[in-house]
Length: 397
Image (cartoon, rainbow, N blue to C red):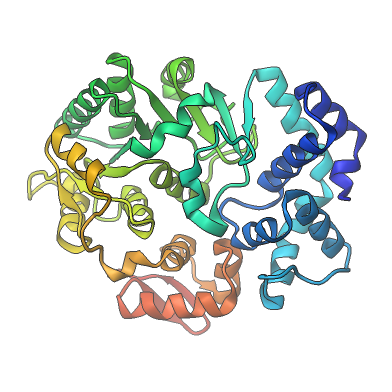
């Protein structure tokens, strides 16, 4: 058994949080909480290990490997096991303290730790992420509505939105809410905030997916908005309370927004906007993508026009057209460069300025070295990655 599960402070925190659960049920919850802390978001090796062994035995296997013994589980290659264990080792060493603190925060702040074993509450569409699905969700608010988000709509877009973009987002979210469609977004300034506020105004369900801990207010200016969302909907994250948001976690958060929702609509986005990353994840999951057109001279709409022209997105201008997408289950023919989720993960791991080795990209993306090398080749052919010696970065294309 993992040292984390044997730790007295962890056991006491778990017993205080789930007094009616059996010992084995608490072990599963603690193990999933531990994986959400030990492994970085979207870690595919962690996902395969948990799927192969279950969360409790997987945590024990990781602990043994960190101590220098034990072979990788079935489905995990030797070449990716050692780098993964090296990534996990620092957090495993602090695991008991980190897990106990996280569980205590959950109890003290009235949060919920939601796990796949919560059959009536867990949003099963997250399972479509496969090995990259989150081991658990940390929820501020009511988790009941999460199970019904498959028919929900993600509305995302630029932080520096124009008045036109905020108006369209407000109209779409408000009208969809009146039709009983849940609105999912990331609580950022601009389009995200407009969509959340419109859903709240119409009494609809809205869910905010954060890149950091759900007990942290980010952005600071949306403290009141996040509190209102938690009162009637849910604020959700895949990292433990207290965890700060980072650029990588924002990119990983986008896959949850796409996976939770039945359709993703991009209202305004620049040419290289993070909203296109959300659309890429939606395409890789076979979810429909809608894009709102703007003026051809508007830089804030360049990303939407790119989605329409290159990625098979459907032009949407009102809630009825979004509703049609919710009923189709198909976004048309997304471009090959965003269909393979491995390409998305490697592109996420590349920097625009810093040059990174294949090994560094593998650590960030959670992919095996040969998978990274194959993905880099495809990205280079598409002009999306460039090479200098043994290092890589995002291309200008």
